[in-house]
Amino acid sequence: MLWLLLLPLPLQALGATAKTLGVSPRLVSEYVPSKSNTWTCLDGSKQIPWDYVNDDSCDCADGSDEPGTGACPNQPFYCQNEGHIGAFIPSSRVKDGLCELDCCDGSDERPGVCEDVCKEVGQAHKKKVEEETKIRKTGSKIRSTYIAYAHKEKKRLEGVIEASATEIAIRENEVIRLRDITERAESLSAAALELKQQSPLYISLVTHSNALKSLQREHKKHLQREEELSDILNALRTGYNPNYQDMAVLEAVRGWEEMAGLPHINDVGKDSVSNEEAGVQEDTASDVAEPEEALDDEMWSAEELEKDLDDLLNSDYVSLLLEHDEYVQSPTEGSALFDIASYLPDSVVPQFEGFRETLVSWLVTLGIIKGETPSSTDTSHLRQALTDAENELKKVKKEKEDAENDIKEIFNVHGYGLEGEWKKLDGTCLRTEVGDYTYEVCLFGEAKQIPNKGGSTFSLGKFASWNPSPDVKPGEEAYYQKQIYNRGTRCWNGPERNVVLLLSCGTENTLHSVVELEKCEYQLTGTTPALCRPLDNFGGKEGKNSNASRDEL
Image (cartoon, rainbow, N blue to C red):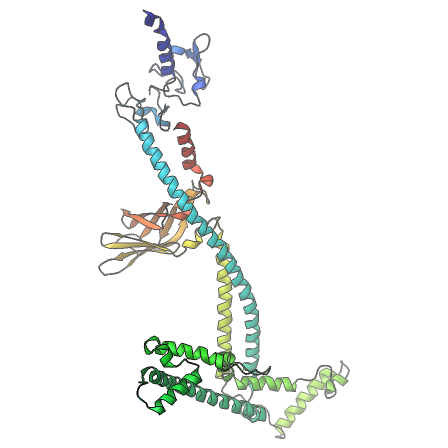
């Protein structure tokens, strides 16, 4: 009969357990009766007998006396879920006869209604977490390469900006120079320009240029003929019969081998030498056999002739003539021997300048000297050169401006992320086939619907923003889990096509699904390593749940 003496103990323990049913671990310490066997509602509004707690009758205004019965509305019920993760469900779902997945221990229902499956659920959850952790670890490594790319891209853009600034300064000076030459040439009469072109210096420059062009043309002809002769001799060398005693052929072959620095064909075998190999050997041997002649300081090397001669031959000699004329006519610095105005007092100089202009005007009127006539000179090539220089300057300025804008976006929380992890994916296109269409999203660009069997491609919208929800702060992981693409091609009798792209952590950049939620409103899902933040930095709800799962498991 010893068991009868122990019977009250488990009943008391059972009673204590019943009173704390549905109470979260954080509040268990509050559910203890006083010495007088009473209990105070959590809001402090009243005291009730301890027996009233969890008696299926709502006595406290805040409902705190019924944490495990569902008698009080809007009261959370806590499922212990041993072997898995504890969870809250609303009181309306307590004792409703349905087995809740969130309450895998069945504590929300009467005994025997729901089995305790927390062990199985916990194991499945643990396996899922491990798989997600593995994916996140791999993805975070890929993400780190994206961040490294962003830093390299920032450095590259800084180099572009610096180089562009230098080039802009050079091209601005070039534009100023060409504009001055063009304006002077356009104001110069045709007769005056023709007279200047009779200068011995100009004639000599043009003559030398024509001579160099002729030499270049003949040189290229000789190079082509030399290449053709080399092919003929290589073919003769590899194809002749040494047993046929034709001394002329033999001498020609040996002479070619000696000049080209090639081994005798009988020593290497006919099959081991091809025309291409012979040509390579020829070039190499020629370089060894004929050392380069030492060049004077001002002589051009073969490489310079090949690279720079065309630019020299395309020089604008009219512009050079005008620049030379300006240089020659400019007074020597510090010399005022023939400058009459320099000998006059400053107060008299304006009157002297006016007198000189009047005198020149009279002389022109009387026909003693010729005045300048409106220009009839063909200066179109100068004007074109100025236009080209101005266009190049605009192009370089645009490149610098684009680089400056890009560098601002790389580590911008609203752009490519605080760490620049999205810069690498700018323009990366993700595709998936659904039915008769291929759906394509080029990140930060445009989304498209492409028919697989021919037909028109429809724009589903261009990138507009990250997650626009006011409940999400820029920089949070949730902020980068949604992209908005809008203002696509308008549907027939409908709105413009729009896309919401939902992204999650994954080891690949890919699309998984496409759903048309409403007419012309598409939801696409996909994965990307850019969202795989390192585990030690992985915060938010997921991080808290991970910690909770470790505590419970």
